[in-house]
Amino acid sequence: MPHSMKPFGDKLGQILLAKGYSPNSALEKGIKEFIKKNKLTNSNGESLELSYKTIGFWCKGETKPTEERLAALIQFLELDYSQSNELKGLAGCSHEIFVTHQNILTLPISPSRKFFIEQLLSRFTVVRSPAPLVLLSQYDSKYIRPLVVSVAHAQYQDVYDITLPECIDESSFYHFLGTKFGLVSIENAGQFHLQFCKKFALVNRPFLCVISRFEKLNNEMINRQLSGVLRSLDEQLGHHFHLMLLGGEKLQALTMPSDISSLLNHAQTEYWQEWTAEELSLFCSENMEIPELSISKQLMKLSGGHPQLLEQCLTWHSANKPITDYVEGLSRLPFLTTKFFDLMTTKDNKTSLAEWLKSSLIKSIPIRPTWMYNNPLLKKLYWENLIVLHEDGLWWRCEAIRLAGEKVLIADCATE
Image (tube, rainbow, N blue to C red; front, side, top):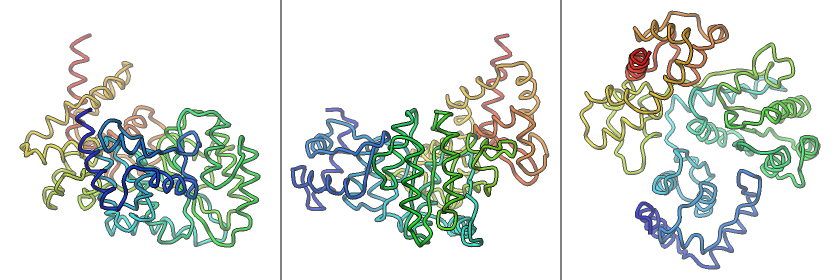
């Protein structure tokens, strides 16, 4: 038995017992009915399968669950935010909150963040046929989507939360997309568009569609095709069809004015606000104690709010590592070293980086986005989340990142 899965198995067993369940055929029947009723699918658009034997193996710590199956079980058991993320953490799943109708109200969202999202959503009510809203961020949408969806559920009766799959063919993609909206026998863009219009043209109240993970959609043809489909749906159903898209560099490219075939050249574009110390609990694993506010502010500054750096700071803080060692430790993280080595592939890049790494402030520049269009290296640094734009200019996100780049630059020069 893999020792690493035993804590997960023990915890799952305790939760099942407390809920009055055991891994048997009665549990399997209930889950199957729940999956069918809620149209839960995997990334290929196929209906999920979860047997009581599989759950039994999980309880014994003999197998590791997939995120999709674990999410289905969490929703079936109606677990709250705390229990959901404890199970997810013990199972070694990615740091993403499972948003369910049961845990929406327990998400730790700060008042300022809630107000920001509410202000974005209010734009859909200002005009009769609102344009789509594009929310761009340097952060992975897995940190943002749950917060947006949780606030949206308080304003909309129907919220469709679509996380795009990666590396998938056209037929499977539109079948997957169709199942998310309760459409059947969908194999291509035309069928999806036709059935979507038939179903939702009859709806007499606004509904929200949140689509995320554009960065993972690696099929360029599907990406552009989806843009066209959504644009057409927006034009035909704009009064009730409220569309919000979450993403980063790939999504931003579709908002460029020169892209006349894009859905998004008429969209409203906003940027996600930086994380604050009050939101640190979003990055704490279940077994971590949330630091007091003064410490939280220090950790946020040291990490620059970069999720991977922040989570590392929280791990060190939990292990009582001296905070004075954090900057040096963060600067040696392998993923930062790799990023900077990849950026130093040309002489021009090395020259620019050598100049910018001399100071925390890279340059004083106008507010985005015009600066990004004119310098590919700055654009790359931005979307790699290594730099941040403040009102007074463009800065390295934190001293640890600047120091990491400086070390790579010195090492690279030494090998020439």
